[in-house]
Length: 524
Image 1 (tube, helix red, strand yellow):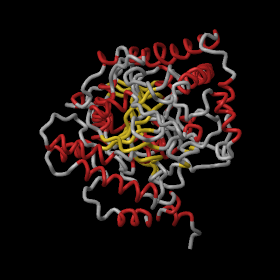
Image 2 (cartoon, rainbow, N blue to C red):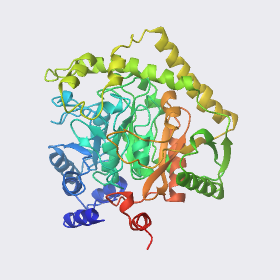
Image 3 (cartoon, rainbow, N blue to C red):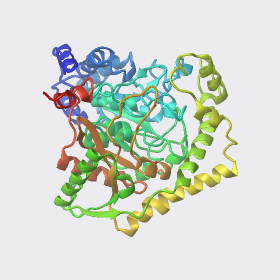
Image 4 (cartoon, rainbow, N blue to C red):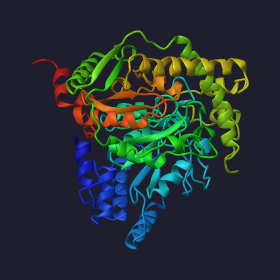
């Protein structure tokens, strides 16, 4: 509470009230002349200084764009001149620091090995946001190398950015790997943000930070010029404080990219996701509860059952799915796919980086980490080492693993379940509440639903469901390929029904809250 008071005092002079203000509200204010993009951008920069660099020191933003205010003034001038502007004109956006931008800011993936990776080029995602008028405010911290370096990592930590803190309880984890985007957007350090996911890296930090997060169908959004893990599973996606803002951001991001063959269908499949929210309802919608992923710790289980009851009361038809559980061999197959593709895809990316980047292969990165005391000071790099021994993309074992896992989770998983029970979507709790960051034992995350959509390459939307002792938890809506519009409409109706999001409090810990503190003290 003290930190929240300090932050509020520091921000009292802000000219434009950005806290909890939606991207849609900001866009409307700018269009109506109630604010300028320069004022909005400055308000966010002030807030980053007050909350991220000072105050609670969230460490969620690795770098601000030194050209942000210049870009904001250019939008203001274009608006004043009567030029046609895009739907995000003048709205500040933060991007995860594995996404390249043409601004004079390095794309580090959190690693000191890429501290000089200033490429001078926009990823297509960044270019699309610019074309829509967005101000690229800066880059967010992340779990280093998108959480693929070690099987014993500490989510939210990177060599460049340090540890991201959860704005709901500062000693709790933000989950990975889009941890900085999660914390920053929860704390209103930008209107909306972009994360990336291979398996859980949008949905987990969104759930733990009280956000709406969408992991799109692989191929809806370009992956070019984004530091990769896996061409089978990687995708960028929106993270926002509301479904409407996520839909607005996705509409700007989606589309085909000649350099990314997976996106060939995207122009035909993409749509106006904001328009798709019109008339959103739960009445008559058939939702399948994935029982294998729906039994977490007791308090969240109670919240989930209460939420399902609300869905029923709102007219949704609930189907319990108790006969499906991903086979153990699917997890083993995914592991082989990710380590094989990591070596091939990361080596290909490193070959395109400027000469200032001295590590040109995964083998070089492993050697760099061994030589740098900060990089391996908290945990190792066993995944990197395992991937470096991979046999390549023509390895029969890899090809078999990819075919097995994709079929099990896609055609024989999501597609089959939805067809069998005539469902609109599958649902389950996204993840358990944030765990306390533990530099000895590593991560303690709970939740098993993200792999279903990640391995299949299908979309997964998480929407705030409520809180457990002040810590956010989300509900996941999973559907077949290219069903983003349907999932967002369901998410909007769910959001209106449960109103599960609360603004962060920047508490020191859950245990210092008045109710918990009284219970933890001796009885008198």
